[in-house]
Amino acid sequence: MSRDQQTHAMQHTLPLREQLRRSLRGSLAEHERLLRALHPLDQPPTGEGWNHSELSDLLPPGPPVEAAVLAGIVPRDSGAQVILTRRTETLRQHGGQVGFPGGRTEPDDRDAVAAALRESQEEIALLPTQVQVLGYLDPFVTITGYRVMPVVAVIDPAFVAVPQPEEVAEVFEVPLAYLMEPANLHQVEIDHRGRIRHVLEYAWPGQRIWGATAAILYNLRRRLEQTR
Image 1 (cartoon, rainbow, N blue to C red):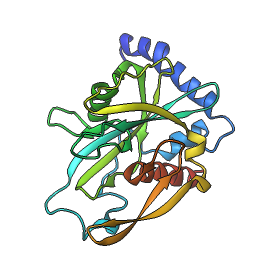
Image 2 (cartoon, one colour):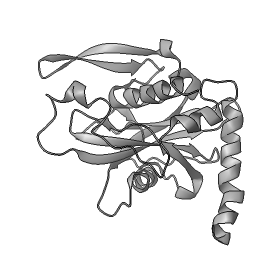
Image 3 (tube, rainbow, N blue to C red):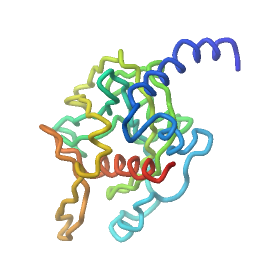
Image 4 (spheres, rainbow, N blue to C red):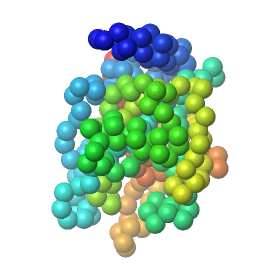
C-alpha cells in the first residue's frame, strides 16, 4: 500500500466503516455480518442473475445489457439509512420509479464498481471520495434485458445530494432496519403483456419501492439471514 493509500485509509475508509459499525449495532445487519454476507470486491459474482429462471421466457433475445447500481448505506446517529432516488417522470424508461443510483455499464468503465460510482456522481453528485465500497450482492436480471450488479457501499453522512433534474426528481433515505424487516415486504400482482407476474413491494410512506429495487433489497436481507 502506497503512502497516499495509507493516508486515505486512515482519514476516510476507517472512519466511515466505524460510523457504519456504530449505526448498525443491535440491528439485523450488524457490521461484521454485513461484510460476510457480501461477495468480496476481488471476487465479483458470475451467472445470469439469481432470478433468471423466473423470467427466462419473457426476456428479450440476445445477451443481457450489463448495468450496475449503488446500494448506498448512510450511517446516521438514528441508525443506518439506504439512499434511494425517484426518477424524473418524463424519462422514457422507468419514469417516476424508485431505484438506486446507477445504470448501464459503459465500455470505459473498468468494472461494475466504476460504473456504479460514475452513474452516482452523474445522477446525484456523489463523489467517489465520499464512498467506501464494501462488496457485491447477487446479480439481478430485469425484464427489459439488463443484468444488474448491485454494489453495496457506505456513504459519508456529510454527503448532500444534488439531483440531476433530467434524470432524478428526488433523493431520499429509508431506514435499513425497515427494509430488512420481512413484515414490510409484500408480494403484489401485475399484468405484464397480458400475463400475471408477482413482484415485491415496500409500502414506504409517499413512495412506491417495488420491482427490481425491492428485489435487490430482498436479496440483501436473504443473504444476511443466511450469514452467521
